Image (tube, rainbow, N blue to C red; front, side, top):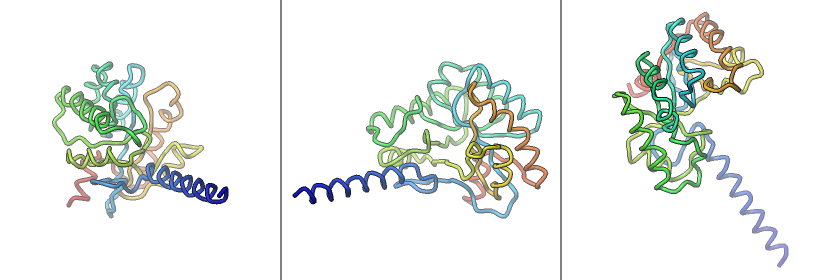
Length: 229
């Protein structure tokens, strides 16, 4: 009998590990549309920033992108849009794309349907309150999703956006990014908080290095348009 219990526990543990690993997949989800990169021959790449807006670093990154004539996609949280509305408007008025990154940035794996609706819909409302009229894409916090989140997004007609280049995985962020980008890549970066100074410093080098290789920077809507034909 003891062996049976051991086997049951082992099977349950294995199942949990498989569910956990699937929940953080950047290439697939149970329902709806997910884009982690676009298969294209065009030398285009999308630069995306998660979190914020913050009062400390929004102007810095917006000015930096303007200096390099780059339009990016900012996946913002509803809570920070509400608290830092002036900075959210700054991103919007600079012509960047704004995406939905949930309201309070939870790991949305075993989240209830009502909480999923709050996290997604209230953030969409916060983005629309800025005057933003474009399609709103969703990036799951930590890249995690399982059942209720993708089901809700599918019902709302919202496309999930992940990434194929996690720039901060490399010891040298710029070098890692430049070496791993392919045509149609989506780059993930975090630049809104004090702890992300290394990432902020890497942005100009990433832009210059990829342009030297012939890449052109596009927003997520522009990249997805290539996929949709």
